[in-house]
Image (tube, rainbow over all chains, first blue to last red; front, side, top):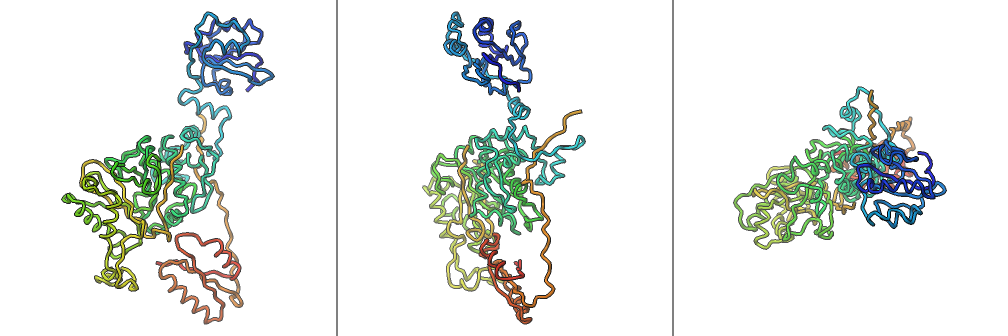
Length: 478
Length: 94
């Protein structure tokens, strides 16, 4: 762009009533002590006839000055802006223009309008066109005959479903969802332990179908996956089923619409579908974790496309995030290395004692009924089931305590070879009582539609705990 | 004709570097063999037998163990193995 003209610059658009209000004053300013330039965003008839009027058709000039409102009046001296005001405020205009009597007949104050540079879709296009583009990712130019979605498949960037082609415009728009700088490195993604920038997360979030407002949740989920205790390397490369399950707590879940209600673990909600998918795409594309290569899952699980839902928080039950040490008003993602969904159908229990016994019986099949302290479990209690406990004044902690008690088993029944089944616990445990889950290995959340006496068990990776993966949480920040 | 479409690379942009395998020794005489147990169930059955067979041939063997199979070997362990031996055998088993 050319250097700034000396004197006064007025940026205006015909569409703005305040710009029309000040239009007659421009003739007065043109007679004043300082040279005047007028940059018009929309209509060449504005201030027509004055010298120094330029139609800023491409908006390059307005963009270069960072104009947010019209009219804006600036004074330039020595090639540099020294003062500016926007809207019409008589005192400010008189001071900036050095014209003490300016606009005496006009009202004292009139607010301006938004600059055309900030209209939807225009801001990103301007950012790209006029050099404010700070994106560092390698540009991949497609051939004229290439279909963008097919090109993403061809380059191995997809999980098997079509991805949204990550154009620079879309990535810039995505980055508006966070205050974090695109070049910030948030960690090293396994298995390649490749450094991962906020920008790379945004590129993959675009591909996954996220809205910009989801980006802080995706960033928190990726950061959580990179916490050492989560063991993302092992979760990825295991022959077992596990993949990261993202549970969202706090106001952010409601603000962006992460589903905790009807079909919470199913399809049909953009936030659930795309946030979990974005995390998996980061692991695949940035970390290099692809099935058949480092990902050696024998069977895998559909949750490895995406597995994200919110807890349907209830005042009588401590949310998962609070149990894990966060404030009730904090927004938090918790990652759990989980397998698939096992339904618990109990339509007859009306007492907490009966329902807890049902849950315990069903939880015994995690991994294998004869294994213990291998995989953790995430128990998802539906509202109708939760009501049975809440109305009887059972807190979540009380339910967990009861379950832990009910899940103690004599090891003799579970030893290798017992019941004619070779699988089982080592003989050294004979004569003892064994808990099903390691301490802290049973997580409980409330979620689901309001009708249905069904809950769900999401079994954890059989290498749960310090040996493999421990659930981790991360607060969501803007 | 429309402008070509530009996409941003979602990967870590690492150009794969082909790493040549170390040359195989012509003989194992005088070399020390590291046997690394990655802590996978029953891997020791295989490795014990390998150690036994190497021992019968008079080859020096040193045994190592990773804390868990779910994570890469700790740096200190890798450095120890590199400092103390010439060849490494590890077993993946289930």
